[in-house]
Structures are given as C-alpha cells and as structure tokens.
Amino acid sequence: MPVNEDVEFTVPGAVLRGRLFRPEGQESARLPVVVVQSGLGGPAESLYPMAQAFTDVNLACLVYDHRFTGYSDGEPRQLFDPWQQCRDLRHVLTHLTLREDIDPDRIGLWGISIGGANSLFTTAMDRRVRAVVSVIPPVSGWTARTLQPADTLAELESLIPADRQAQLRGEPAATIRLHGAPEPGKPVMFSDEEGLEFVEDSLHGLPSFRNEITISTLDCLFEMEVRAYAERITAPTLMVLASQDTVAPVEEAREMYERIPEPKKLIEYPGQHYEILSHHFPEIINRTAEWLDKVMTR
Image 1 (tube, rainbow, N blue to C red):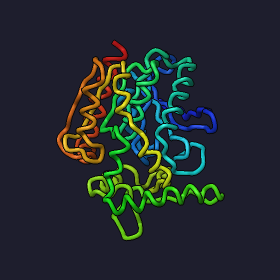
Image 2 (spheres, one colour; image 1 turned 60 degrees about the horizontal axis):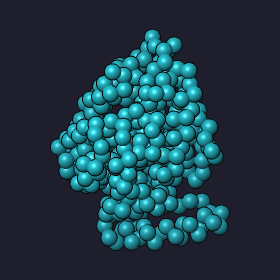
Image 3 (cartoon, helix red, strand yellow; image 1 turned 60 degrees about the vertical axis):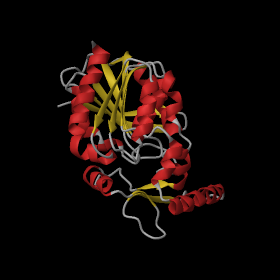
Image 4 (cartoon, rainbow, N blue to C red; image 1 turned 180 degrees about the vertical axis):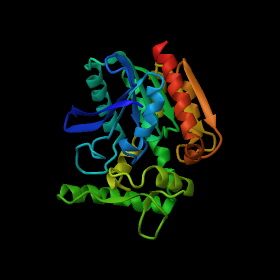
C-alpha cells in the first residue's frame, strides 16, 4: 500500500490542500512524481484510490483540490476556473521542485476531462513538465456551449451578467446543479444517463463533493481554448480518447493531437465520454501509469 502525506501549498491568494502518495519502502528516495487533475466538480479525494497504480510503478502521486473547491481555500465556493487552476498548478510545480523527496527533473501531469485540458495547457507553457497524460479532454470552450440545447444555453448565458452584477453588490455567487435530470427552471450542466451513473458511483457520498457549480464557472469554461497551444507542447504526450465522445468532442481532440509534436501516443476506446470511464477506468489508469513510468524513469 502507498504511504500518504497530507500536504498544503500556499499560492497567491489561497492555500491548496491535498495528499501526496509514495511507494511503500521508498520514503527516503528522491522520486519522480505525477500530479493528478480531476474532472469538473470532482474533488481530490475521489482520485485517492487510483494513486496505487502510480506508486506500484515507483512514481509518487499528488492529488489536490483546486482553489474554491473541496478542502482548499477560496471564495466563492464551487467556482471552477481552468485558467486559474493552471496558474495554481504551476505554483504547485514550484513547491514540488523544492521538496527533498521529489526529483525536480521528473514531474509528470495526468488529467481527466477538464483536468486533461488543464494538463495539456500547463505542459505547453511550463518546460518543467517531463510528460503528460490527457484523458478525454475538452479542448475547446466554445464547443462546450453546445452541450446545452439552444433554449437552455440562452437561459444560462442570460444568468451570467446578472450574476456578475449580484456579486458586485455583495450577494452570494449563484449556482446551478452539476449533474442531474433536467427540470423546468432548474438548469443542469450534465444530464446524460451514463454520466449520472458514473458520478453516483464515484462521487456521491464523498464529504468534499458538492453537486453544483457557480454560474460564473460557465463563463470560465467557455473562454478556454487549449487547442490553440498544441504546437507548444514539447514533452512526451499520451492522449486517451472516447471514439464517440460528444461531451468533449473527439474530433477536436484528434485534430489537436495531430498538431502536437512527437513524441506522442494516442489511445482510443469505443464509446462515449463517461462510457469508457464506466467500463475501462482501471485499465486506463494502469496503462497510463506504465507509460509515464517508461517515459519518465527510463
């Protein structure tokens, strides 16, 4: 079993909290590390069980909550801002390079869904990243708008400026449900049945999980365009895609992959976004951990 340590990282304006896992018996070694990023709304503790796949191949594994979420600081709660998360991630990398038990020249990133997009962008901008794994990443914020029917999207977009005004007056940030069945007058971000099943199995019941996001999260998601940075990614890259993905449109991810320089590798599983997680998640974790071990330690 991996040895774990609760950690805190002071970054500008917040303290981020998470857990660092190390292989048993390697407590004094200077190890390569993989920083794991969750999907939208997923707290760090939802990913703790996957840490052993990394420690089994002698990689340390760090999972932490983004600011505004989980056990980390920041207001308003449940704001998910990818650009801010990437800036914070680069501060976390700096903290890791200063640890005596981490090899600063062997830091990898692993992310799923929006965490996969974060990992690609950060790799493009930060040469300290040795390798990156991106699982079913949504690479275009503009396309994310199409997740909603036209009438629902219009309703949500009308709420964004109203929420900005309300927060300026000192009112709490407005929220919508993250997952759930659509109801009149109650917008929800994700409502597909496979997604609901996956969330129910992996997230509900965790103390740090809240089934909501701020309205302002939508603004932050819509403005992110990771695919514009494809040519800047020079570290070895592994992308894992779902062949019929419409949540994170697979055609756009494939197009971005084609523009990423070598060395790179592409794996596709048949099915939709959440479908491949429901059916293949343990296999995906093990395959990607083995790939990271290969490219970072040999």
